[in-house]
Image (cartoon, rainbow, N blue to C red; front, side):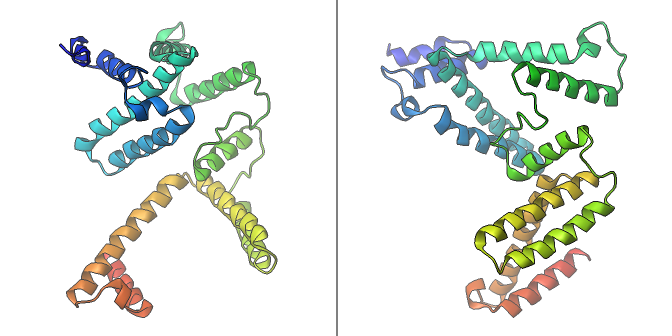
Length: 270
C-alpha cells in the first residue's frame, strides 16, 4: 500500500486533519506549495477565511457556514504545524493555552465565584484580566497590544474603547458631532495644500465617525458592510432595468443611472 494511504488509518476528525497538514508540510513527499509557506504568507489567508465565516453568518447561509468554519480551522492547524516545526508550539499546546485562559477568566463558572456575577461585572472583570495579562507581557501603556493587523475601522474602535476606560472620552455625542463638523472643515482646507494633508484629514474624519458610532452603539464595520450590500443590491437592480431597455451601464448616462437609483430606492421603501 502507498504510504499516502496511511492517512486513512488515523481516526476521522481533528486528529486526521492534523495528520493531513503534517503530510502536506513533509519535506519528503509533501505539497511543494504548502512546504514553501511560512507564518507571514499564510496570515492573509487566515484573515480572509475569518471574513468568509463572518460573511456566511451575516447572510445566514448556514449550509455554507460549516465549510467556512472548516477552512478557518485549517488555518489554525496550519499555524500549529509551522509552530511545531520551528519548536515554538503545536496544535495541542494552542488548545491547552486557550483552555487554561478560558478557565482562568471564568471563575464564576469554573471556580469559587460560581454563579455570583452579572454580565456587566463579568465584562469588567474580563477587561481587568486582559489588562493584567498585557502588563505581565510588558505592555504597560494604555494602547499597547491593539493588533496592528486589524481592519482600520475595527482598530480605531478598539483604541477608542481603551481610551474611554481611562476617561479620555466625551460623555455625550454633542461634542463628537461638533468635532465632526470641525474635521470636515479641515478636510476642505487641506484639499488646497497637498494629497498627504488631505489623506490625514480624511483619516481624522473616519476616526471621529467611529467615535460617533461607538457612542450610538453602532458597529462601524457592520454598518459599512450593510451599506456595501445595499449598494450591490441597488446597482444590480439598475443593471436589470437597463437590460430591460437593451442598455448597459457603460452605455447609459449618469443622469439615467441616478434616476434609476432613486427609483430603486423609492421601491425599497414601498
